[in-house]
Length: 81
Image (cartoon, rainbow, N blue to C red):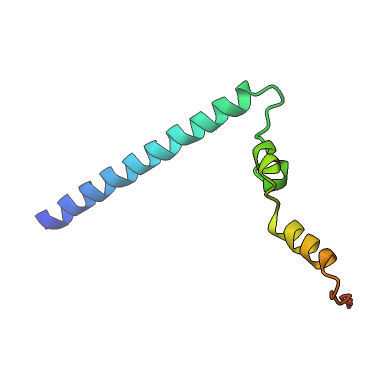
């Protein structure tokens, strides 16, 4: 029974430590939201990034659409609904 008690104590310690790390992360996120002027996070999409636009990098969907338009041999796709 001693082994089982030590195991539960260690498991409880790990769970509490994990909860503490998660709580600290949530506090940092809360502080960031409260200190931002509008209280919002910046967009994480590629097409909204100024640095990506300067490098000519687009979203995969946009790149695919551009490549389909450029080809003189492209076939019109029929969208069925």
